[in-house]
Length: 255
Figure 1 (tube, rainbow, N blue to C red):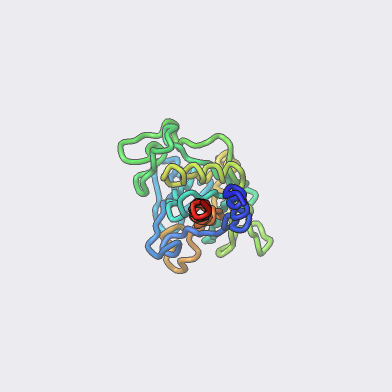
Figure 2: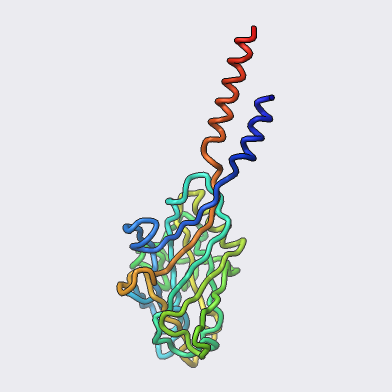
């Protein structure tokens, strides 16, 4: 049998392996894992506490947007990302209603249009993405089209997102592409959460409070990023090389 055919057979016997990895501060993929999570407001204030807010608050606070950034380097080199999702847990004490907040959109963040410009937690505000580095646009630089929108688990079927209920930003082609690009270039995946309907209703307050990366009561309620990926089975290349070497040895002995 030709070694090329043998390698094709090996490829069928040893398919790419699939796996799932989660990213959550203080939990996974290691207890020491940390990621960026904070909100900033239209009045210039910012918040890096146990909650992160999305929406609008009248009376001077104005727009409230959350930014996040996840280091994906724990995924094995050469992997292909197949799907990605973000799960947030509500901390209750919301303002307004689910209808009032409206859809929460997730957009990729690209400060000044450059992917390698990475935000620094605690330094981000409506005007800067890190100290002495201004956004090109007030309230952040991000892709025009949302990569995902939240699906709310309103278990009580009321008008509020109660404490412990969840919001899931599901996978999409754009979300996967952004994650793959960040992973391939060794950069964190950075995004922003915006509630456009809430921001457009400036006469009232409508916002959600989510448990952030610093929520201490239950670590597993912190923002959870889940990625499914595949990586070619290690060993198939080595087996092909071994087969090639064996083929050469047989030919030599046959002379």
